Length: 347
Image (cartoon, rainbow, N blue to C red; front, side, top):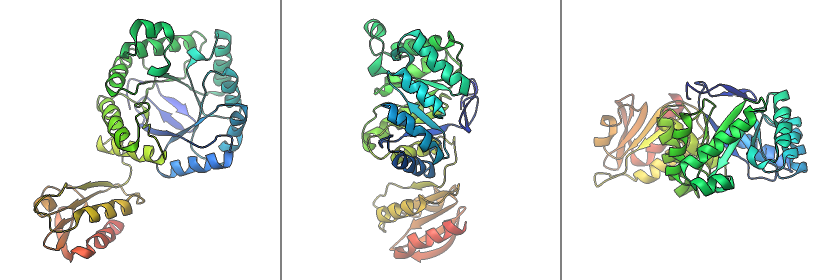
């Protein structure tokens, strides 16, 4: 999103330099099982994920990249910790991007081997700095502060630049929302490399979505961030759905139907909660860039929701359907969801 950042290609997708913000996620399968991993990647892609990362803990996982790539259409990122040989092997086997922390790869010669393998194949490297894995001298000097994350990132950037490697993406994540926001704001003033944003180890879907929405949303609202991952415990499809909603809320991307509904109050005379949940569920698979409103009464109906393309407003065990702010017909409460879906499908 950031106009000031460089533009890079990750496989067939561009990030940075004003390109649309991309959504990333990570598989939780055993990468060594290529078929199962590819199946999850394709499910993530079907749900709107642009780039998918896989863990590469050993040589078998690195070699599985060759087979996985044959079965998927989205760019593949290899996640490497400590072992430079796995990074080189993953590059040779066709990954589209590497995620490493150069500082924990080893000496300069080892980092050079990785940089050379990526440079020859035009594979970008994401420098992934986390507050939990800072260099000891930086941690002793600055603790887990935003400044510590930035210093670590800049040190790792310099390490690659000194080797003539510049196809770099940076992330500096913390499980603290405030630390994450402050760190990215500091870093964005000191580098023009594309930024991968997110709150690491955000938690289970309930608390994790709140943390991620605040952290990622604050940065995107500031114009910071070129690609993102919402980190949640559980099914990674939830990460993609949450990321889409964050981008939709900030009007940065049209990702299917935007759903709005009122919170209910004493005026509500229909089972709004059930209707809203059913309509949202049925809308999830429809790829139309329209706004749908489910409102409990006429106060919140065509009035407050007149900006919606299609919606309903409840009444006395009945409701009205409206389109582009104009009421088109009245139906019984039991038929509201079905009739609304007909209008959505025909819009």
